[in-house]
Length: 414
Image (cartoon, rainbow, N blue to C red; front, side, top):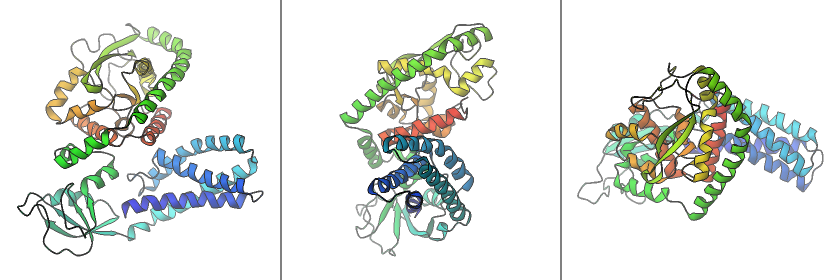
């Protein structure tokens, strides 16, 4: 039910935009119908990218509303493209935009505040050796109703085939467990992954799940080549824009505090190879003279100009040079310092899985979890990174780009 709710909201929002477009049509024609259809897809596509339909937001009106509002400027931008490409009247687009905004907002208020869809629950039976782990998570999801639980181990001598009779409800079990074929099965690992956007390290210990992870993490040459082209083009465009404001940044940094303009340090990249990145200095001189440490919230080592640069992330745009060299990608797990990784690896098993892909300037962990300043934070960040490595695609990269821009405009850097 939880996944059907997401599809339901997408369908309703598309239908609203499409119908509001038809209502605002000046002339009924195939071209105008196509515009109505296209605008509906644009709304759903961008709302999904910004997080309106994320499971962490879908039952919370305040979170849904905030993300909905931020998606509007992007939607408006695409409306401008429609205006210039299809030569439609401004009146039609403005009326459709306003009517769609108001009706979608009203419907979300009714459905979420009234908890209407939560009344239609998916009845499930938990079949697992670790019942409490699955139960404690499922109980927090209002769309599920646990009918029964069955203690069961896939390592039993019967070859993992469940013999006892089960009522005809959907079964939630561990990945790779073999249940009778006439039952509808959902794997807990996949439910957790889709709802949280994370892959807990415990799941990787499951050999069957690890095999699937490694299989899904491999992408074809078309994806890799296309991603490299986007990195080069993006780095060139971004680099030219950054060069225009760089002199002003340099002057402010030098006037604000004593020390060099750039800060050079090592990072670990794809296949565990170490490379060098340059960042605009945001801390006082010799802030990490003894050893590298995580930056804390309200870190006293950060300069006044450094706080602004970190908020806007302007100190990191020098990494566009690493994109051109092929050491980094625009989107990927954030690279860590080798000195800190030595300690992290003691607490996080399978940490080397992050070396399967190039590190990035922006990543799934960055747009979902912000900065890391402890081992526990590093563990959660790693779980987000594992999700990206397994599920990376052009669309996921686009979602990360949009959400990174959202974070940038709201000055969420630290």
